[in-house]
Length: 261
Ligand SMILES: Nc1ncnc2c1ncn2[C@@H]1O[C@H](COP(=O)(O)OP(=O)(O)OP(=O)(O)O)[C@@H](O)[C@H]1O
Image (cartoon, rainbow, N blue to C red; front, side):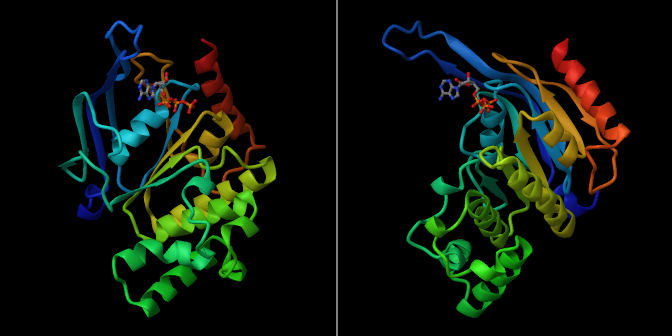
């Protein structure tokens, strides 16, 4: 492993997260959302977390992001314990609306993080031009979020995250709220961007087709409580992938069978 990819490796051992029941009528009992999770995501890899609703995918992703603290086990990125959010990791959420600033233009939204870091204006321009081009929004830089469709807003969110150049992209069902056609376009774009930038991607979904279309490996989370990664499927299909091929269907069938068991 090169040192560049080692710095982007996510190493998870025996990771757990529990909450105690604090409701007035609650027992104070401890419930594990995830327990004994072991996982290594290599630098530059496209890794999928796939599982049924409520199994703890977002909890695990938010722990990697540093938003949720662990109860047990170890979680390291590039050899360093994760105990808070960091510039090496960025999250793309399902709803772009909650992350974009409505009073800023598309360009200003993309440049926001760079401005906070006091990057000079000319350099900010060059970065926002590059990433808005990459996500296909070169012609919409001066629009405000309310003038954009859902898919366009999601592209702005992605451009903004990429502009900050994190090592690791953490994506929580980022296309879940989009219509089928826009979703398909965004999936293709994401694969293209990932191959161009070689980022580490951890992508949460409950859609088997999306998992196989995007991931180099698909980690299946067992249904909760005390969920963990019960199996990992390697998907050695070439990109861009075609859902209509027999090989694609074979992986689909195998993973579907896993959930039917
Ligand atoms: N702060 C919290 N306190 C107690 N329980 C929580 C808390 N946050 C999440 N949970 C519970 O943890 C479980 C896993 O939630 P999580 O959002 O991680 O699942 P998910 O797999 O991402 O689900 P979905 O696909 O529906 O988004 C759920 O049962 C949820 O109710």
